[in-house]
Length: 236
Ligand code: URA
Image (cartoon, rainbow, N blue to C red; front, side, top):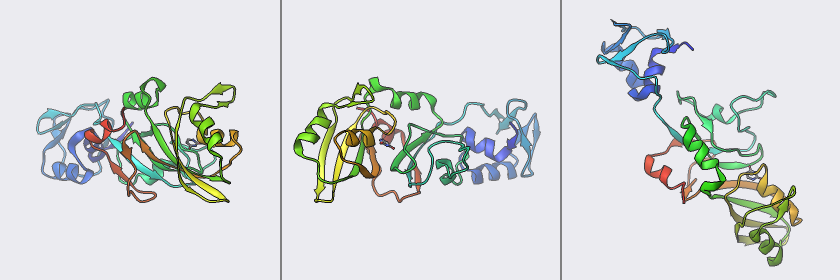
């Protein structure tokens, strides 16, 4: 696939696109042995050799990890056949081909990790790694302690029992209750189905953490890059 030279350089670890442009302007970049100083040159890295300061730029992409605070109304996919907004629409200025790690429903908000690191994505989603996902759910009514205990022990949804979950009531009122729930599975609409199974509809749902990696104060619709140290927080 043909792409702009500065975009390729940025993606392969040269830094930001602006930095890559400066490198090109300063004559540090060559394509097939010839220095390129003009902007906007397009090429396919699979077919040409690009060098930076004489060293071949590798096809290997730099691995990036992004934490997005997904708003409601965005689909967790790269392309929506129905033309609805997709989560990657929110990643302005990100030149990497990242994909979401797991899924949040259209009407769920909160923490969503996106990466170009396939092995991390697999590990996070594989049940054997038991990566905890923590949500805050506003549910209709006021579930009894017995019903919440049932959920925490595991409940049958679609013919299969869920793994134990931890639950904590954050705020109780008669019309609705705010509950924090941590699960390590990733079945489709799992939290909604779990509460539906005890007769309490989820009205609002937000993921607030992957493991010990918290969404924190990241504003709705905003994203930030994660450090290697923060990635470690995901795992038990
Ligand atoms: N559980 C749900 O029901 N929905 C989500 O988006 C994530 C977990």
